[in-house]
Length: 142
Image (cartoon, rainbow, N blue to C red; front, side, top):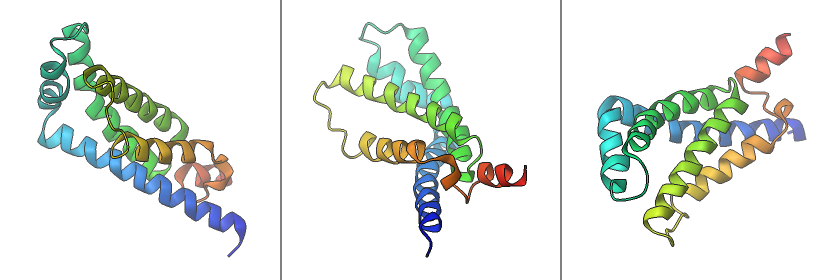
């Protein structure tokens, strides 16, 4: 198998797994848990006793499910990947901040680090290596 083909498969698998992780989390949070339920469970109630204003907890808690849903889908299909990865990177920063605010020695190895590793890999690979994506297909078509 040619080196460029191996790289294309590597990016597809990393992008696919990362996209599925975030997309399925978004599907659950939007359609099962509901954005309001997500905001209550993961933002408003746990951080009500912190310095964070309630409006920011509500705004973040209601927004993240949609960001995960849309950006996860975009990463999964490979369309506007850079923009989607930046959005998901912001979600990871917010989650990291929140966990550290509540528990300064929070263990990230099960949640944040695997997602961050995949995100960084896909973000750092040259776009032309991602041949099995909508972005790649559109670039070749033009």
